Length: 393
Image: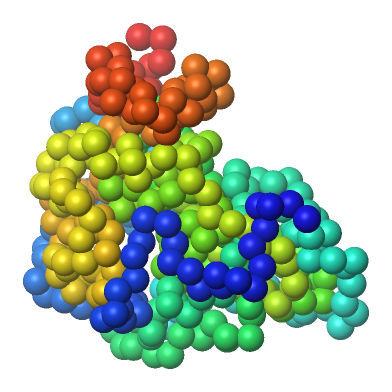
């Protein structure tokens, strides 16, 4: 058996970079800063309401600034369209699937169940199919109740309700979809928001298809995106990457430029082990995200269990982002922000061999040199959105 597998021991070990303390409390979905922006009047400002409205309706007046024109918003909103179809299809039943609720657009579980020779064989099959369906990364971890929301929150009815993911689905398949590198380079802009929308639209297709495949095999499976639980610690446990200063998952393949999905299932699978390639050590010396954040929402010190506000989980020592400051900036500029992704030294095009070499060296004693080179060579600088529209300019 490969040593990349983790069995019964350390079943609920702390994900690397996230230290659980004695006063730990699981998180309620209501306290997520995006859910709060629907009910908490300290966050649900006029600008916040306009922020959400512009994903469905054109602005009455578009800014003249490069990257915030009608064409930029048109592309951003079109990129979200596939994801939006799944999110909105069940709103009359008080569900926003993919963001507040798990997906229900699935056919019944097959009565006849396929038997695999071993969990390793089943895992190889699932990962092969996931990649063929379009998943850029896929890993397996155990269901960990610490990361499940203690209760769900409806944006529509503004009410809490029990988390409807059953605890008899002991395995979690975590998928990651890359976001477009060139679009991220134009952050902050409405145009760059297309990278986020495309990530979620691709994520929805992969998660729904893979979930149905497992159900067709005769096993229960429930597909999920941003709903039901905290995806980043699950992804770390599933071996997809490490935790970064910017509060995001850092992967070897795409840095922080990814979107996550998850599938809860009772299909017996082999468990992946967390990986380590030097992110914590590099983030300790790097301040590019905290220096680049216009509202200083990212900590520039050591990991801490201090909470900025109720949108931070209690009893976890880690680098934490101030969600109120972060979302406030999103609302004021009328589009999502990913400056912390754009400027991150791990945000590279890893199809190029020299970037693959660079990420390896960043995990060694040469990390100071690699950080210096990253700044010296101008990586992470904003590209004018007009250049994206006219790449030959």
